[in-house]
Each structure stands twice: as C-alpha cells, then as structure tokens.
Length: 467
Ligand code: GLY
Ligand code: MN
Image 1 (cartoon, rainbow, N blue to C red):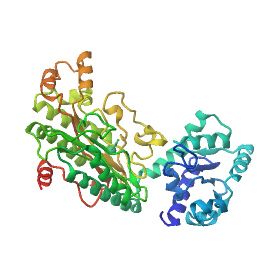
Image 2 (tube, rainbow, N blue to C red; image 1 turned 180 degrees about the vertical axis):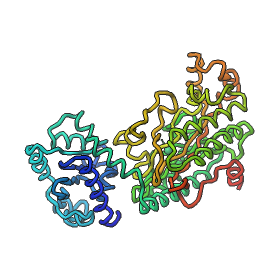
Image 3 (cartoon, helix red, strand yellow; image 1 turned 180 degrees about the horizontal axis):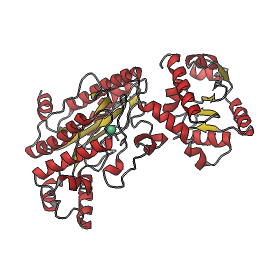
Image 4 (cartoon, rainbow, N blue to C red; image 1 turned 60 degrees about the vertical axis):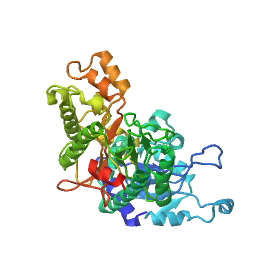
C-alpha cells in the first residue's frame, strides 16, 4: 500500500468535494468479506474492493469505515483477530495498527458500526455509500441502513460521481504501478507467444502464461483469452490443439500485487507466418489501432476515437471488396458494428475495467453523452472526453462472426454495401483479430504504458516467431 499520507489526502479531497456539492452526512465504506467457494472454511482467494483499496489501502476482509462530513472524523471499524484465529492464520495486524497504516485516527469494533449508523439515521442524517458488486456488501448495507436490496445496490449518486472523478485521473505513484503491471503483462505475453506452435494444446500455453501472473503478481487481471476463434470474444475454453494456418487471439493481463492491472491483446499466426489474406486484414486492424493512438489526447472524446477506428476499418475492408460505399455514411449507419462489435476500450486501474462496478455509464460517459444503442458503439465503455492521467485501453479488432453476419444478411442489413457473397466464400473460417495496448493520456498527447511495447507489426511478429 502507499504511505498513509496518500490515503489521508484522498479522503480529504473526497470529503471536500462532497461538501462542495452540499453533502454533510456520513460517508460509509464497506470493504469486502471472504467469499466461500464451497465450505465456510474454503474460500476463494480474498480480493478487496477497489474503491476501499483506493481510499484506505487495507487489504483484509471485514473492514468498514466512516467519514463524517460535518466533524471530519474518520473511523475504521475492525476487530483484532481472536486467540483461536491466531492458531489458524497466525498473528495479524491489530485494528489500531491497521488504522495507523491508513492514517485513520480512530478505530472501533466492527459491530459498533451498526449503532453509529443508527444514530446518524435517527438524527436524520444522510448516509452516503457506493453500490457494491458483492452480495455480502449488499446484505450488510441492507442490515445497516434498513433499506431494500434495490436501494442498497444503487448507491449514492453524489458519492459515485466524486469517487469516479478522482479514480479516473491517475497520479504519478499510481502510474508507476500500472507501468510495472504492464511490464509483467509484457512478460506473460512473451511466454505465450514463444510457446505458440501447431500441435500444442491451448491450455498448456495458458497455464504457463498464467504462472507469470500468479508467481510474480497477484494473479491474472481477468480469465486469459487464448483462442483460435477470436471472433468469439470471451471464449472460455482452452482445450483445443493449435492448428496450422489459424490465427490465435491472446488477450491477457496481470493484476500486480499492488492490484493495479494490465490488459494486452496480440493476434499471432499459429505457425509463425501470416497468410497473405491474414496479413491483409491484420494490417487493417493495426491501422485502426495506430489511428486511435495518434488521436488520443486531452480534450478529444474517446467516442470519436472509436468512430475514427471504425472508419479506418471500413475503408480497409472497402479496399478488399468486403464493403462499398461512402465511409462516413457507413460509420453513421453503424455498418462498422458488424466487423467491430465491441467498444474501442475501457478505463483501467485497480480494476481491469476500472470502476465498472460503480456503473458503466457513470464511469465512461460525460453527463452530456448518451450511449448509442447500436452494435459496437453500444458496447463502448469509455466515451468521455479524455483528461491527462486517464488510463485507457486501445483495442480495435476486425472480426468475421458467421452467426452475426448471417443474422444481418437475413435481416437485409447493409444490403448493397456489404458483400455477403464474398464474406461467405472467403472469410467464414477466418476468425478475428484484436490488438490492444494500455495507454496513459499525458498533458499533451498519450504514451503507451509499460517500458516495452509488445511486438505488433507482422514483420516484428514473424521475426520473433521464426526463432
Ligand atoms: N481484455 C478483456 C476485456 O477488455 O474485456
Ligand atoms: Mn481490454
């Protein structure tokens, strides 16, 4: 965790911005609890809530805290481990030590929180809280605040907005940790690429990649995607044998021990050399990726960057005869969504999709922006105007999803503009391509995170894979 001053400053800034908004109640934070896998004594690995980590840093279960906006008092609610627990889990920091680490002057037993909240409610004070993603936290809020599940799941908008505002802009000390997570992500990807060849079972490579994440970091930042069917986004199984002549989409990241994440995607030819057709489409995806990065700068809406990436993809596809028509009109009519049915990117930080538990639209959309309903743009998780300190992913792709293409064809969508006969003849067994880097918005433009960029051009990739 950072030094206590970081957490003191963050909480003070949060309290000040809430007071500025006219709030004067009690801000309540509930950290995560253990989640049982099967038995009470057999839990999943503990993962702390990310907003809790941001404001308190303490990485143990069953913690809560309040910030009193009126008096400024901050209290940690935590229990010392009892003597029985010490037998099983060994000595643990006391509640007093934990409070000191997070720069909290006062602490109290966990159960005393109920009375504190009751007193605030009885005095007619507002209690502000974040929407939890875990059921335990929802239940605890229902119990503490005497509210319904729906209310407990919703959270308090003013708090959500201020937390998002702060966490969206990464500080220098956070950026250093994200760079370090990206360096581990680089290593994880390099191991996978070096093992990739026809005849190997996908899962054997995934295990070796994931070992980098678990041995050098906290773990993977999401379940590793390693697939010869890149057109299916979150393909969960890794049981296939690598076949010659395919492309393999490798989308993987490390969550470092600090909990900051990385998230990279590369697409490799299974045998180390792209076919001319694969290379042709790969260059289109790469051009979209480079276009997106070249536009990434403060003030530009990431939604416009997504649309520009779509335009590059459509003009590339026009040059190979897959679509035809005016590019801007095709973008406006949503034709790009057939080939790029996901968004260009998302925020990244303590979560790989940063803060999406607080509400995807609150995180990714400025108040005057509305999420478009159409394919592709409708899945865009980050549309906001960029600010220095934003950390985002840049992950366009080109996909040929047969089920989706057939659906559009049946519905007559894009007829006259989409060459369905060519798609059927040439691209139904193609798969998909995605290329993803992690990007920091700087005061003037952007830089890619991590000290080295994963090889990305066809020649860089073929060169490395031929060794
Ligand atoms: N890299 C996985 C995702 O962004 O969903
Ligand atoms: Mn991603």
